Image 1 (cartoon, rainbow, N blue to C red):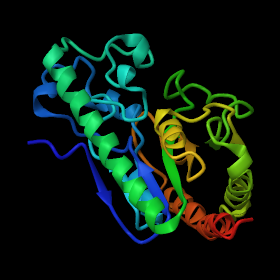
Image 2 (image 1 turned 135 degrees about the vertical axis):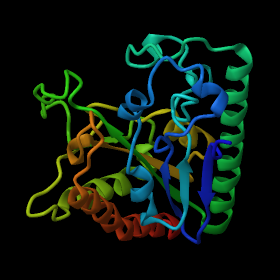
Image 3 (image 1 turned 180 degrees about the vertical axis):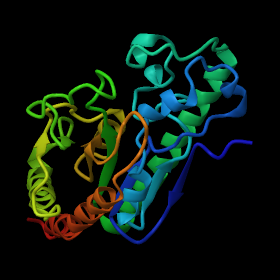
Length: 263
């Protein structure tokens, strides 16, 4: 039996941390249908994001692989049916319609439950912030090739395209400033907006569903903290990223307090 698609932990905070691509498990019946091996799937997943999500006592954690169903894509693109849906990867040996239907049923359940969670958060706190945590690859040319150009691949890409800046600009800039200002072992992280990614469907859906009440910051960490091909991590850097994220929470709370105070 596979583990659930996701888990939610509810605390008493308007800040919710999400790691919807952390999972690697798949339904047993799907395992037999994959052409793409487990190690290859792991390369495109977001390890360690569930750990980083523990900066908040409110957490949304994906437990199964994005190759089963991608919770950060629109419903009609949530199951990778062809290589162009999945970085050119040939994912399936076969994919029956009933398997797709079950995956999409779970997708619908995820969004329904998260909607209820966020609605309750608004009723209790007035506003909320979601830290939508992801990672991305920068050595796609191969394990021994040069990494991608850092000018176009920041260490932290903050996706903010779908955010209503008339409401959230101050909070976004405070988050970016606090994250880039953190002492990352004697240096500072390169944090830029909308360079590599502009935010996925999950953040966009939050903004459309809770306009003026919810802000989702799509935070993509380049996999500088690990070997994206072998999965080997640099434990010190993984822990420092957790601390860097944790350091942004007071500023986020101040920003939400300003909104509740009317400016």
